[in-house]
Length: 628
Image (cartoon, rainbow, N blue to C red):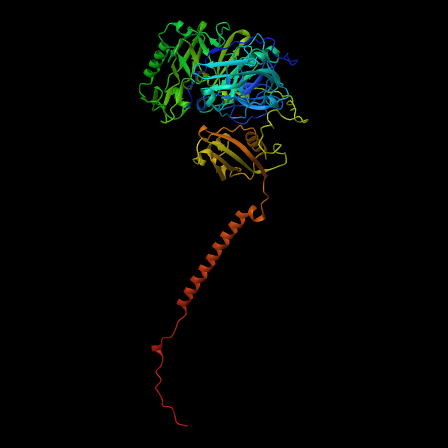
């Protein structure tokens, strides 16, 4: 079950680093698109694309990069960020409730085991510490600025501040930019145990990635998020502005109310009927806050009970059951069916009503999550909050394009298929990626040679090569010496690489202690003799860049060796085995028919020929032998 994180920041140490940031770039203000898709991208888009049949117009050029993980399975979405020269890769949680971007530091005394190696400042030729001054808190040596962030779910992060080059991948139109980030020394709570490396802070604040890029003038002061639907994932994140759809619903967002992104929620309707609540209930403390780093939604006590009762009354024909986790008193219903596309026929529509009566409708997938132990059962993904703040996490905005228009102090909502949104966005050709300092070639910043395992191919598939087999060795580091479930692991690999399970084959494995080295073979589909170049390139890229995510029960993994083999030229017999097989079968049948015909003919011939019986012959009297 996805963790129930409440990632709203409750305390932090303030910083004033107005002079600590690098100067702005000469580049024009251009938005950067970071799609959250799970399927393979298609680069052949038209010049202007559509919103569900209508034209999607962009005000400025866009770029994109992948976003991974799933809201309910992992509790978050992550994107890839590269820091330093040469670039070091990190998987960071996209979080509008955080104002600092941070990754584990190489000398972290209390950091968990995460997806990627820790950041090594000494390896980066462009790294500079943020020196201590009167505008920040300093470390014990009074040499470097520090940061500390504590979250409501009792996790925390603290460390030192550094400045380096941040890169967004080789598909990004935004060239690498210098920015300040945190290098962690201590992690606690979920931040320690999570698989993701750290946080990408998109909140309001001088240390936010958004604020730093906007201050440099490289993007406009707006960004958008779009999360995929239930059981689908995918979507897009846009840094910069795009032209809003004509029917997008906007509400005012007060930047002076709090550092978080708030909206003016006035009412909640269930099945068309408003909950009997005072509108001020949604305006307590921080008001109504949107937080992409929080999985579920949390309402003040009275609002939660009113919402729960209204939904329960509408589905009284369903059986109420216990939740999947005994540690929580989840409100769950069975008998709704396994087809999530039909949930709107069972569960009521919920509407959020803003100031001036603007109404935004929520589908059942925006307030339910699937029961992990009972098929066809679903649970409320909205819970009671411990204080008066209304907190809306990612579940509320699934399949919804949410535009954070910071320049105009408003937030917009528009229902769409987020998993397919990236296909309808128009991307112009991105500039070549920045070359790495370690190599004079124009090498993509998306692949970090500093962490690439030995034995990996230096290039992707040459255009003339027909790939017939991809094999790789992965090393699992698990918490015990019990042999992992290879069948389940194969299914996970097939899902991550978008293959059929029959294409993933276990070759062999060895283990020492709790380390297992497993060799896998990836073969073409049964109907093909080789992989297409696009498919092979996608598989190899995901393997090389450690973009494959496996269930946490298997621990962490490292790619040890990757081997690509061309399509084997088959002999004449192998190429025409079916012709030979048919010929053998036909010959055998004809031979058997001939043999059977001959046997029948011989049998009938015996019946036709007459034989004279012995009894019918003349009896010759016996004569004595005459003497000589």
